[in-house]
Every structure is written in C-alpha cells, then in structure tokens.
Image 1 (tube, helix red, strand yellow):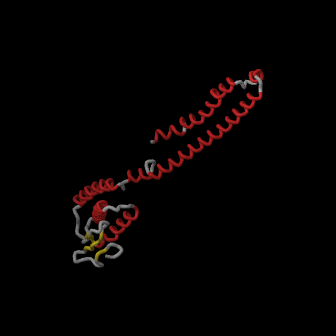
Image 2 (tube, helix red, strand yellow):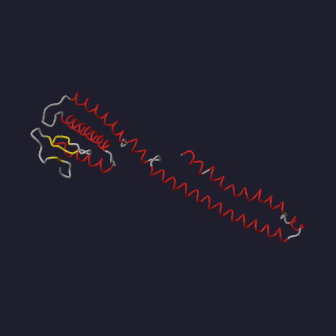
Image 3 (tube, rainbow, N blue to C red):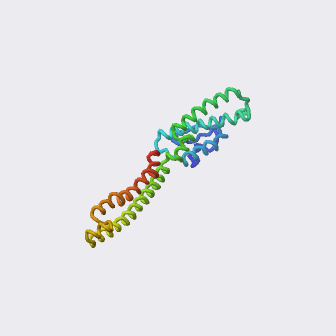
Length: 214
C-alpha cells in the first residue's frame, strides 16, 4: 500500500480501485472517486484524534457515506452515472436524502457536527474554561492586593492612634478621641468595615458573574 492509501496502482476490470480506510479496512471505489475519498480521510485524520479502533470504524462509515453522497451528487448534476448511463433521478435523490440523514447522525455521534464544533470553540470549551480561570485568578489577586494595601494603611492609622493614646493623659485622650473606648469604636466602625468593603464589592460584582456561569 502506498502512502496515499491506495492498494494497487491500476483500476481492476470493473473500474474499481481499493483504498485503505482509517481503520485499515480495504474498500473499493471507482477510479473517479479516489482523489475525493483520500482527501476526506486526510482532513479528518489530520484535524481530529481517534486512537480507538471503534472510533476509526465509525470514521470509515462516515467517509463511505460521504463518498456515496458525493457520487450521487455528481450523477444528479450530470443525469448520468460514471459509465454514461442515464439515472433515475428520483431514486438517486432518495438515496442521497437517506444517506445525508445517517451522515448527520454519525457526525453528531463522533462530536464533529457544527453544534459540537461551536461548543468546543465557545464558552463551554476547555480552552475557554482555562482562560476564564486565569481571568478570575487575576481579579482575585487584584482584590487581595487591595485588601493588603488597605490593611497596611489601617494598621498604620491604628499604630498612630495607639501611640497617641499611650503618650496622652486621660484628659488629653478624651479631648483627642483616643481613649481605649474610642480605639475600639474606631476598629468596629471604621477599620473593619472599610477592610470588609473591598471583599464585599468583589463578591457582589466580579464573583457574582462567576457564580452565574458555573
């Protein structure tokens, strides 16, 4: 067998040439059809990965169905078969319709119909899922950096208030609002809410859209 999948260099007495299908099964086609079926096999096998023999056997069926549809399509356009004999157009159209239906179902089974391709390229694809994870991780990291920055600012403010509290007597503490009670109030009403506000904004904006898409 050659690299092109042809078994035998010349057509037999009836005009058939044997070609090797993806499962390595041998199938006879008319000489006029060799180029078509070889190209279909090459494209399908280059663009997809089917390591299992059962999948390859389904691919065999698919390319043979496509071959029949190609054959009858050409015959209908010419109103004659490969040997120049007139065809029954109505009968051939019936064959074509039946095989096209089976072909669509087989492509769906193999996951290469348009719906499957669109899904693979779209939001449900693995690539899109990984890309979304990267975006979410980046947004989460930004939120954590904002929290850290704000925590450092609040800590410096608390440190200054504590220093002032320790360096003042009771009267000065009351006048400057740095009593122990004032510090606890500042922690409760200012520091903690401001820190939590960053997380709350993240959850109600960016993270909220994640939950809807999970």
